Image (cartoon, rainbow, N blue to C red; front, side, top):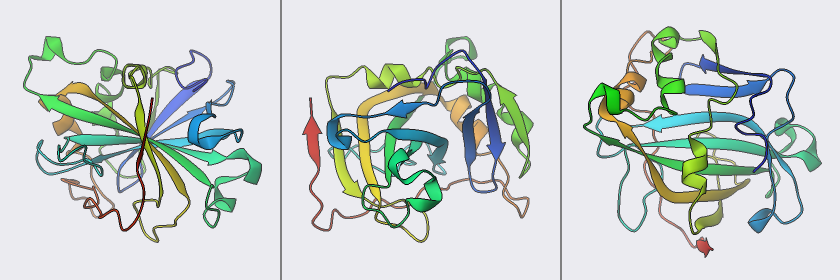
Length: 217
């Protein structure tokens, strides 16, 4: 991974009516990933989106050996060989999505995850659909903790929203990022285009349906 938590440029957080989206913009080098299951192709970060549920017991779109997690952050990258993300939907190697588990714990405010607070401290400013704000350019630095693990899981699959294009190399980091219950609840205050709070936006965990999941270390 390169450039995801650079201090250059800027970051924006948007309420897109179905989730919270973060993009890296401005005068900065593109955030990219390569290697492992991606071989020599270079994938550029398009956006980071978040999935959550109505309770802290279940909100991620993956499980790990039967364990559920509170939330899941998905860093969506497109294959630069196809130039734009819109050219990737019908390509089997079009996208690479890094999935990060977020697990909520009951902790006092002063003990909340300080790096994840770069996002949650300003969530109240984007509760309304189509609203956005600027964030610290290194607002994704909390991801580094999850990346520093002995290995990860990977498989070929689909995006988790309609029309579920089969174009994704999934990379799932097993080490959850510890956040507070309060930080999680702030996501449930985000409103959709009908003005309703989004209590959950995660897709049900799907059967493997013949897909092979690999562990890479």
